[in-house]
Picture (cartoon, helix red, strand yellow):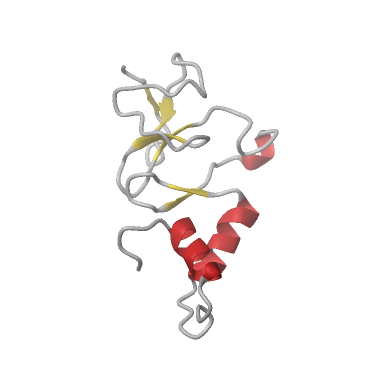
Length: 111
């Protein structure tokens, strides 16, 4: 656990540290996995998030970017990581909604 930092920030700080290898807690491996799989971290709780049905998408970042975190239920943009509680970022049309990760149902994006 690394309070006050995302896993990406912590991994970068560790890479720059001269003695970072001595007390490895696995964060570097997590960062590598995030990069390899195209996963991102929720901007509110830092939980790893990835999109479902990747075989149906041109790329993980090419389609609709609106996501709901399974862990904290935050609504955010997968592309730019902006929180979308009552706002929009412009990466995906406002008419697009969210898919609830627990029910699979459509959730309207209310601005």
